[in-house]
Amino acid sequence: MRRVLNIYRSTVGKKVLMAASGIVFTGFVLGHMYGNLKAFFGPETFDHYAEFLREMGSPLFMHGQLLWLFRIALLLAVLVHVVPGIQLWMLSRSARPVKYARKLDTLETTVAARTMIWGGVLIAAFVVLHVLHLTTGHLHPDFEPGRAYNNLVLGFQWPPIPIGYIVVMAAICLHLYHGVWSFLQTLGLNHPRFNKYRRPLAVFVAGVVFVGFISVPVGVLAGWLTLN
Ligand code: HEM
Image 1 (cartoon, rainbow, N blue to C red):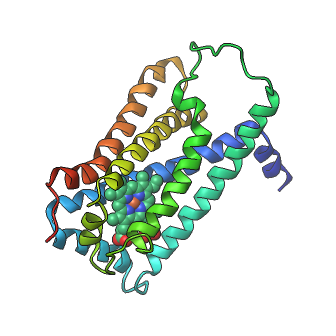
Image 2 (cartoon, rainbow, N blue to C red):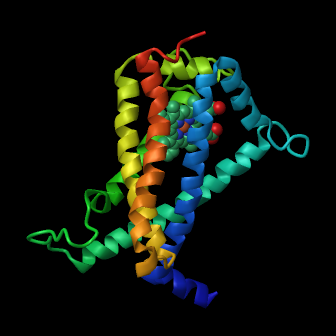
């Protein structure tokens, strides 16, 4: 137990936890993005998919039970990501209370790297508003339970909402880009032989997620996704 605690107390231990939970989130966003694309196949396909999410695991699990297990697992992953993330951020601040007079661009100090903590705060705020908007409907004036496609398209009718989603997706993908780049390093893949693949892989994952996610708000703005 003490060994586990000692590993956690180390910077590397915290980074490994963040990398492991980051992989869980990457899997979640890829899956969620793929699921969202079903909107382009029409209301029936999309509503059927939304119903499947609640029915999955049947008959072993009752309606919605497996989905709740996934939600709990995701919430645990959030804790395992956010707590060490804040601790590392506070450590780096206390290690250098005075800001650098000039930032070195030779290191991996990109915009993405320097804004990780604020990207994280934005993602947390977005997820809360987003669930209230499209899952529970508390922030959606015309929400009808069981009509996922209509709720989605209706929820994007006022242009500032889909535009806001697109802007937030850009910030999320910047976070994801740097996350993928750094977890490859944390997992020990910063060997010169692999280094040249790290950035392209991070750009690829973040790019696919960005294009996939924004296709839905763009689809509504462009009139490709309409109410049935
Ligand atoms: C334009 C981008 C996005 C669209 C169009 C979208 C769409 C949706 C829709 C329609 C639902 C409701 C599904 C249902 O109730 O069956 C949902 C749920 C959810 N979304 Fe998104 N989403 C987007 C981006 C994101 C991102 C980037 C995240 C996370 C970082 C995210 C996290 C969630 C979560 C946690 C839920 C609740 C799942 C549950 O507990 O049932 N979404 N999304």
